[in-house]
Amino acid sequence: MKYIFIIISLTTILEAKAIVIVSSKSFPLDKLTKKQVVKIYLGKIRRIKGIKIVPVNLKADNPLRILFEKKILQKDREWLHKYWLQAHYHGHHPPKVFKSKKAALMFVKNFKGGICYLYKEDIKDKDIKILYEEEIK
Image 1 (cartoon, rainbow, N blue to C red):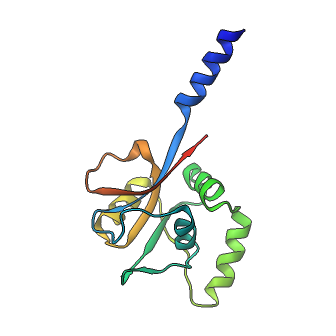
Image 2 (image 1 turned 90 degrees about the vertical axis):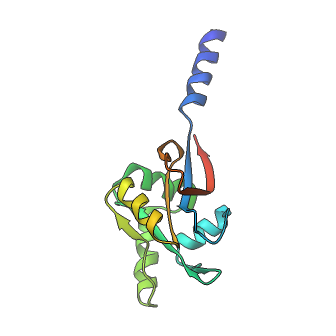
């Protein structure tokens, strides 16, 4: 019985993933806090060191986006929908949406203020900077 517990625990550790917030190497900061990430994705931080920040979302039904909203933003879809409806009337826009991680990453690489979330294991490009990382269990 003891060995079964150890195997299950090891399997759980091996399956843990990390969500990372990434940008191009030219992004004006080297690191972000979780609080900053949330504020950026809620449109409360729009510029850093004079650079326009453009957060990127994946499609609404993407499992990574759902996990990001739950674990990083700590908001549910209904709350976010209402939030952005109200923010729209004040002239604010929700994050840009891309259909794939590849498209989001391409945008971020080519736009100085672009940021997006990915699984850490998806980062293969040396031109990408990890600004924030959180292990997801």
